[in-house]
Amino acid sequence: MKRIYCIGLLCMFFACGIHAQNIRIEYAGDPLSSKERNRIEEFLRHEVLFYSQFGLPDTLSLKLIVFEQRKKGMAYLDSIGISAKVPLLNVRGLYNSKRREAILIGREQGKKKSLSIIYHELSHHLTLQITGNHPPTWLMEGLAEYFEHCEIKKGRLKHELTSYELGRVRTMYMLDEIDLKTFVDSKNNRFMQKQRTEESYAYILAHALVSFWIEDVPDDLFKKFIENLRNGKGKLSVYTQIDRLYPGGFERFEQDFSERFKGD
Ligand SMILES: [Zn+2]
Image (cartoon, rainbow, N blue to C red; front, top):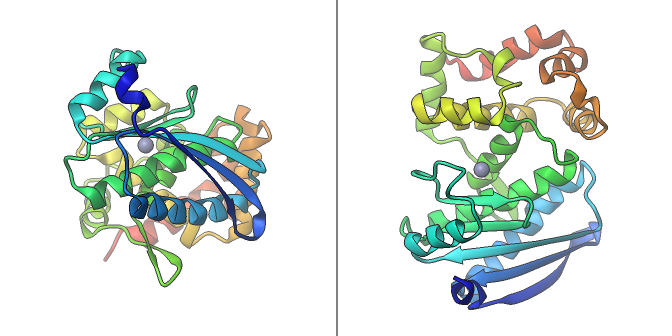
């Protein structure tokens, strides 16, 4: 495994826009074309710009490991002891915070999709930075899904929830399946269990929730929410934090969210 891991090892440093953020990205695994590396770095600059509004360290450093074949990716995860701990059946990429590694486990789903998965995994690194390493699971995965569903158009990030996702959230409302109060405090295990057993419930709801925070809630409220998470208000439940922060409390938050996504 060591050999695969070392092929194509390459370091890139680049500065990010007006915020003078230094980003060090180390590539490993199977080589990416320079065109793909440029696209990843351009996208990462946009992600960093978004995250910098919440306060990022001056220097960011992470490793991106890409495997063309899922078989090799799984062997690598095995070699670092991940596959024994996490069910990986439908997992296409992951971020390991201890090793600061974003790992793409195979590119069988095509080049475009695999780049989107890379944007997802890179977002995890940044979410950990802005939340003092303790993001609620829905925020961690919701932000990552948000960026996975972004494209750069005319120099700006353009985000879209798919029609499948919008339909799925509407169905959740129809079937009365949404319990936001419980969801915002769901721990990782419960979150992933809901994901596996209820047709992508957790990722889609997290994606919708983050889209709501980014696109509908005033920026200063979202900033304050993240700041509270980072500054140790994490001892309060996320429900309580939103209840205290959002004008009209959690009930109003829930109502505003449902108005955006429930449909007619
Ligand atoms: Zn993820």
